[in-house]
Length: 124
Image 1 (spheres, rainbow, N blue to C red):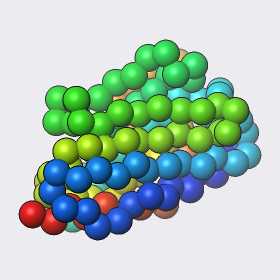
Image 2: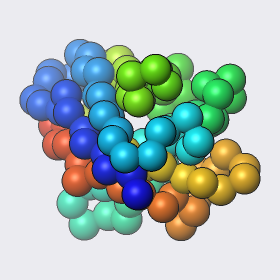
Image 3: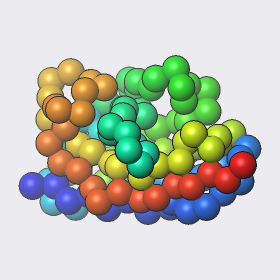
Image 4: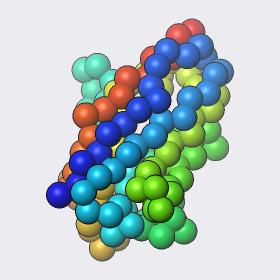
């Protein structure tokens, strides 16, 4: 079992920055690929970023590429999402997730463990 707790969300103006953190407990996160997803009201949960077990490989969709950066610190069992140049359309609940899948993936179905989420609101 892995327990994930997100923090760092809040209210920020458009163009601003936030860094989300995900603290893991239970099994060491170095055995898992880690991902960030988000869900806006009335929309499906969508992929934001993922990072491999070692931290060498990362994925992100075009919508956030160049603005969001995922990183991890396996010694601290933590994963981070640095968000810059935030836009109102980035407003959502952001979730941290862990996957034991062999391949690094954008597919939320292969993520085994999820946090409760942290709200990010970007005002225009």
